[in-house]
Image (cartoon, rainbow, N blue to C red; front, side, top):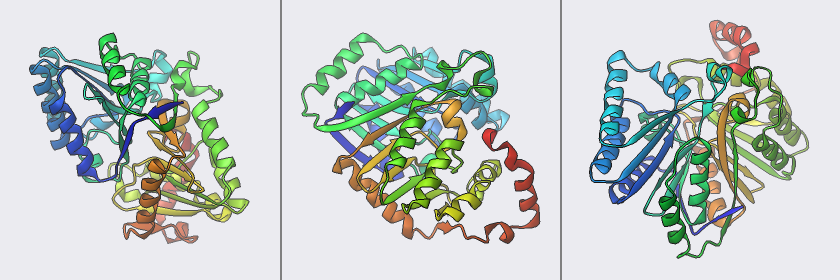
Amino acid sequence: MTSAAELVPLWNRQEEWHRRLAMIERAQSFIYLTTFYLEHDAYGLAMLNALQAAQNRGVAVTLLIDSFGQGLGGVLMSDEDRTGLKREFDILRAAGGVVQFYAPQRWAARLLGGGHHIKIQVSDTGEAIYGSGNITKSSFAGWNEYSVALRGPVVLTLLESLEALSVHVEPQHKAHLKSLAARDTADHRLDYWFFNPGEAQGWLGPLVWRGRNPLTERMIAAIDAANDTLSITSFYFKPTRRLMKAVVKAAKRGVRVEVFHSHREALPSTDLAWIAAAAGFGRLLKAGVTIYENLHGEHSKIVLIDDKWVAFGSYNFEDAAHDRLAESMLVSSDERALRPARAIFAELRVDADNLPVRKTWFRDLPLAQRLRILRYARFKRWL
């Protein structure tokens, strides 16, 4: 368990963006930032320029990016963009900043998409921003994302995640944050779930791993305890087998289950992630689950149970979150965390961009799309 002195919801995309930049501008001694990937676009370049400026004025900057995530995002970039991004990284390094790419130790885990998916920004101001988004135009001017700004002991807890991902955190930086946290009354109790499956696997990585992910297990236990309502947001809803079973079981025992994820057109580069999700539509709809697909993209990760328990962070309902990627979630039953989550789901239910999936969804698709689902759905775990 940990605690917060302050929790500020950041659902509005520009509010989060400006808060991130303001944190960097106010920093005087250190900044730590982790992301799955950083795009060569207006947002990625603005972030790198802000970090470069901070480093040049004497702020110690550490940037951790996931190797697999950056490579995946790099597929969407031109050669010129990739070269330009490397140049910006080199400028930050030349100024004394740390630019680090995370990869699991096992070669099989690296080959099969292992890495880290956690998004945290911390500075000497004593604040952390924690949530779902990457440093890309998609995350700040496209998809729905959810982050929170935090103060208090939880900031130190988040820094421990960075250390678990091989980031060197200076002892004096932790001491400084600890002294700031001690000044405020941290009465918002939080549970922090963190797990890195790459640290628990053998030399074949996720290929043959059948171990238990504590984060997945806790999510299953929470869903099993639902009595009335279960609301979930995820990029594409394609959970690992046991988590899918828990959701279906909840719906069958009378829990009102609703899932908000992305429409197939929200990710123009490929429809394979949507196909993996579509493979489970029939089972979900038969159980009584309501599914909404957001046309512009739902990338937040929120679970609200009985309007009394909420979790949010980086964990997507997908196999990769279970057996390949380091993930984390913050959990609370405090009204200060529940109130914004309830408001978000109330907004999503009436959002015209959220299209309900109907029982006739499959036969309503073009023939070519139906054939793609039949062809690729069997590979759902890897999509």
